[in-house]
Image (tube, rainbow, N blue to C red; front, side):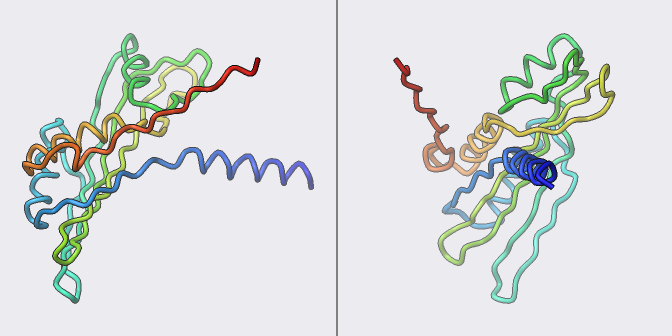
Length: 179
């Protein structure tokens, strides 16, 4: 019984750690402008759109979802690990792994906020093919660098100051010596 409780606790805590960070921004622009800017920013990064749909609710406000295809960031056994490390919270730990490629998928949700503007919610999910030990695709959490780059481009396209759109990276407090 205790073994199952420990296993359940470990499993639930590992799921919580794997949840991707969602970036939320309120943009003082109209929905069609933001929609076009997001689509352009994603396609400029070399990503095709897998899904795009917008709807109007009963009050006349628009909302929509854009999701990119999996965009390959890097290919090749030599450079994949180094490149993906730059964008990852932590790469999956696989002893002797040979990463064949690294990729990202963007999901953007937009919701018109009456006369205030449009709320944008962005998540990027990283994945890669490990071709030696597991021979399968693994998924992991982004550290926010790719999201900030995409938000930077969206800000440029909407002619908004970057500080208004791109959140600052969280600074980790330096650990004090325990002397």
